[in-house]
Length: 258
Image 1 (cartoon, helix red, strand yellow):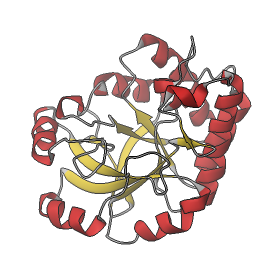
Image 2 (cartoon, rainbow, N blue to C red):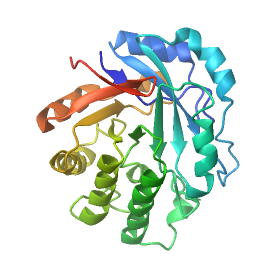
Image 3 (spheres, rainbow, N blue to C red):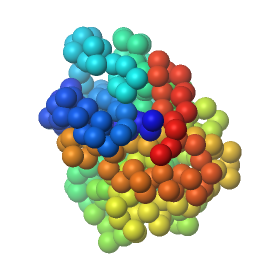
Image 4 (tube, helix red, strand yellow):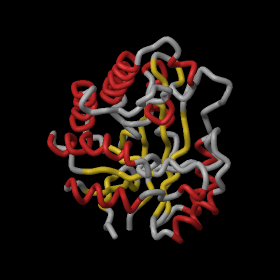
């Protein structure tokens, strides 16, 4: 069974998805699901991207089983690293995802972050901090959405463009491999031909450098987004000679592709 290894229920500050709705859609689509609620300590905005891990475990542990896993998505930031490390030990998470949502302390979700900044400068810092933080957050299992910034950057061409950022992206990919982390193939943007075209060389290079495994994750915040574009993801992974995996009790598990 393939798992949607990245999803957010109402325990995440930016989601109201009910676990039961997510499970229903996952079952209808023939996939397992991992809930990975947001933890971004010291988030600079008004939203509180934290949650009570024990309340989370109490609520969802009865659902945990062959088709349901419980995880966390941690925003990697040097000033919160020690507290994030401690949080990951609060309950026996199945999966810990590491992500970059902030660059130099600013949230790259908002257009004002990019005001007066050139794409080359912003993307270089994004990749630089991704590689640095991954090496420092050695407790994470998976690096989330390498193309996250392309969702929100207001440039005419927001794509991550491997040809333009080869050295920066290679450093991230080497950090993934050096730390024994798995690279996520986030499916949120796979419905865009342009996005898919730009992502292919990134995952080709990951394979060339020695990467073998990926998780697939929809980053669903609504039930209808669970397992979105998974057929495209499976085709891409098969073409590149990669293997889809997930995690259970922080241990890597192979997924049987359909």
